[in-house]
Image (cartoon, rainbow, N blue to C red):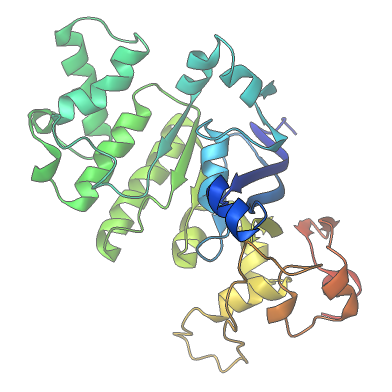
Length: 331
């Protein structure tokens, strides 16, 4: 087995959300911190796709930004092809590493500069990294990149407002591919698109992965999308990974109670008649998370141990899971 391209170990990111100093002094309030990512570990094999799923606010996008260096971790490490990524990001070699990993953002309406033509948007990474010299060579390379995502070279002369949402996201993908990266972090790249356009963009991404051997971290709320694109799935809850499993295994035999609730929320089109447990309760306040297992207030299998002791991630039958009930055989 080859080594993973991306290795994440005990990743933690804490944000201070305290009131201003004078308010804290007058009102006698302590400093407040949010653990947006709280001890996350996973691997992504070269050429594979890991999908992160979970409710809004569980830390998926923060993990994405930590991986590409937009945030510095509070604790933990991110290793990319054997390199400590955040040490490299703080060194003169950062440019070379940034070239090897790129990010596709969620909103194609906000991630493109409305004042720039598509030619300048897609050519910016080429110029920044000095990959292509001369206007004619830049125009030719941009035309090739646009064709690779299903657009025409003539589209380079247009502005973003002249395109639909799906076409804008294709432009974002073309820009991300400009540096010929090995690893793409995709932060809900299809959530702002309608279903038919989602399918087109996902098929383009799958084709590019096959052609170029790309490795993806794919973040999504949509489990149907995840089932289409992922090789493995990580389920996040309140900043922690509660289950990581191969896609087929997770959808066929979900083990963590939270994973079961997420899958039970999908409409049963086949009307199979199987019993279903809808997602119950609300996500706790991240400023004051529950003790022990953070899912215990919503879990039908919680006991006293769940309320007092934080579960560790264990390897079990080819998956990794953090759940006392599964460990003790209560589920």
